[in-house]
Length: 226
Image 1 (cartoon, helix red, strand yellow):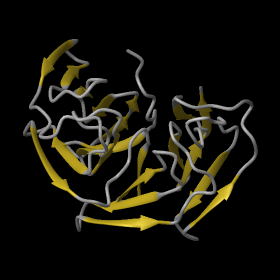
Image 2 (cartoon, rainbow, N blue to C red):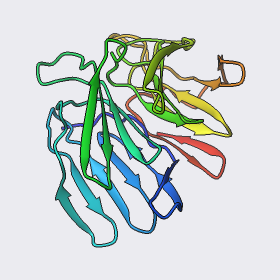
Image 3 (cartoon, rainbow, N blue to C red):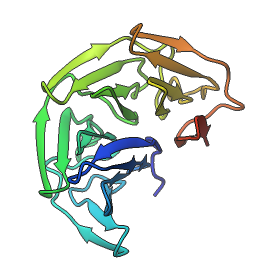
């Protein structure tokens, strides 16, 4: 089964010993690297409550606590040492209006349901202590979640509807790349950036080719997509 490429991003995830290490998400597998011991959390590509955790030190997999609400094609990111899974598609094949969060240290999930969470096939990124869910379901929407206050609000719309897009954070800005605008297409060959200082999205120069269902990563100040 083909995995939906949600994101492939370098973030920061604080560990128990207050050291920091990169956190990466790719496809339906969510990886959270914390401290000296790195672990990767993988969510099944079909609706399944049974995520698996990979320990890069011992080179072993184990099943962890099940998601309260089984989903696939959700948006996921790390913020404040927790893994957050937004929306997606539930077992009935409908949009799952649910936010689920996972604490690696206690191997425990919690969740809240909200009509504000209505994304699928969309990426999520963390910036300045906030989580941004971008596009999905052929939408221009930006949804912003504040983990500290538990608030969800709508942010400024992107310039294009983007489903199956990808996103990264670089130099304090969010970059959304590619995606498709409708079920008939077309695939987008551009990207746009969000500046939290101006609260605006700006279209940037074209990509080398149209992209969707792709990964995106920052390497040495360069954005790589494919």
